[in-house]
Image 1 (cartoon, rainbow, N blue to C red):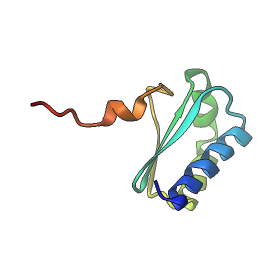
Image 2 (cartoon, helix red, strand yellow):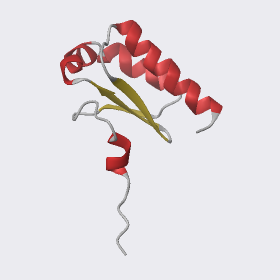
Image 3 (tube, one colour):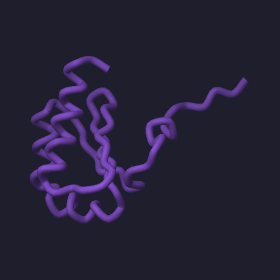
Length: 86
């Protein structure tokens, strides 16, 4: 991860905290895509503020932004990795 991408993630996570998101959260940086993972009980808050969340992340430089419907989970990025079958 480059320093610029790390800043985008850190800034995005700090923004979500300032918005009032509590508990586990993660901003996944997937090239030009941001995937927001928050605890299930915090999804309503992010959805309610989506009109502010989306432009904030677009202004950080992401081209697309999604709220992960599965919420925060440890190893969430690993679940996306392609499996290698020998």
